[in-house]
Length: 297
Image 1: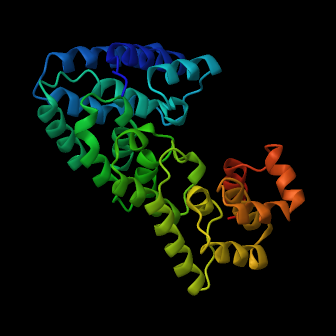
Image 2: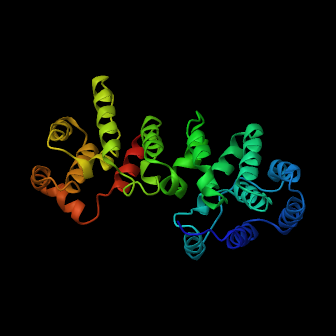
């Protein structure tokens, strides 16, 4: 993992806040930063973290392509355009907390989360990829994914490179499975293809069988995680979708087949030349499938 340059990250956050906020709000933020730096107990941090909602709105950051490129250079996959101004300000304050060590930082984070409302939790979890002591945050991230609040779950699971980089395989697999349960936009999971694994494919096939047995539909993006590990035995499931599924579901299983390497699966793709042509042309991708599915919900 690359070493985070927290000085560069905080400078970047201040820059985008300055673009999206007025001068008085930035003055307040800088004053709180000074107080937080002088207070290792965390009291000033807790106060400022809560009070930030008086100064910063929940409007999304408006960033240029150059701003986004700079963010990706700081942390690959970092998407501050998905953050609102209040989240950004709270992250800026958190990054100036002078934690003595990982244990001190984690205990302070736990205290914040104990009293945090939904929006404060979202800010904390979305900021995981830019926090110090990232190796020590894995259990906290996994615990956060157990939430019943969809927006908090999204803050960790979607447009966030932390799970891809740090969650172990069981925690990653559970996150992906829960994303299907909650019908979240799977294409927004960072590193989905890189973290696909045989155990996850098996889990999702079992999940699909349960859904079918209950007469319920299966999100087409499920096949994204099955394709690279598709087996001969599972081709009967593919055939089921090709015979009974919607047009979008058929596109998904054929895209999965095209990525499987199985000769029998490749023959199925060949038999659907119109879909194969669109896959080859890049007109059918997991992102287009995911977006189309969500539009129909």
